[in-house]
Length: 462
Image 1 (tube, rainbow, N blue to C red):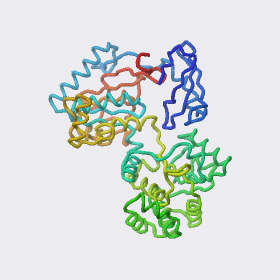
Image 2: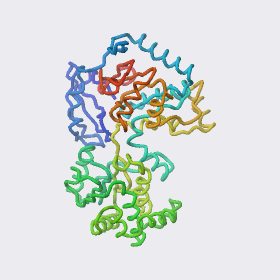
Image 3: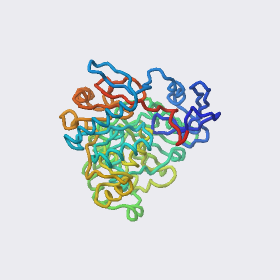
Image 4: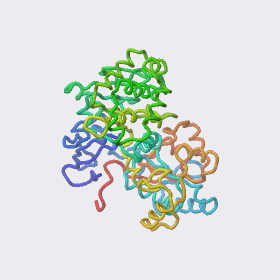
């Protein structure tokens, strides 16, 4: 993004909060602050901003900021130091542990808040020069199920839709997504389509959230039963001859087995309703809306992804779109929305433990390609520890050094108390952040490195 310290009267940039990626116009005031407004020409938000985006100016101050490298003293207090000493402490500590324990005794934990370039450098350092794949990200917590589901269905990590599809849909189905709170700009876009074009809005969620306030149909599905509901929908669509067999024959494989498995899970509407904790009339109404609405978008989020069955839920949703040909055309398709502004950017450059770079794996050919491009001396040979496994390895003493960048795992990780206790066991614990204190720092960070915040990062040469 463009730096707000520029002398330009306005700076067009992007909101750093959620995955919507709203366009922002910032007008620097010459004193470190800026007036913030939405960019009406930006395709993601068309000028709208939510409460977070509209108050971005409040994040530009230096209160509570980490402005200098800091080392923790033996008595637990912090002392300011210079960059040379701090980096020597980090490099020397990592080198000592790698020489003693091997490269897999160290790890990086990254963030979907990082820019793609930040992700790239961190991933290259760990996988190309340290020689370990122990680099993962908080995006794992919100996107891993969608990524796995998309790769299973499409063979690639893609989302087959655009925001314009919400404007053109006849039916929008929201599954496990409190969009009104988590993606309010997108939600307003959906509500506008409902009011202006008569788009029907269906919300599927165990809880009745604010998202259901303007819904046409609300399904309080039993927790964990989303797969059953969509398997029942697939069986119903087959029974009512609403499938697109020409599309299935041309573009899919394994449909027969998929439909058979769906019937085993939910043979008919009555069985689907019983298993899903819903009444038959509600399920029938949902199935009818889906069957009769050609332009349908099914939008899903963390209620689907953050589940032990998350990948199966994702594929159950995708399957009904593939089976009916409701994909790849305006106003239709399965659509995953995330809370991280740069989850995809991190995956593009390999910032996950199970990728090397650019969505490549660890085959000899791929490793050699990356080695030559990076001119790297020791490219990692296999997958590393994913987020949950990484912190479990820290608790067991398998990982001795950790560098956390731009995230707060002591709060955001599952079993946060266990994570906080594990962090105290590290021989070397480094945090790069723009604030002087958070729960992760308080859990025992030894070296704090200041990071540029939103509005301070610029193009090369700025």
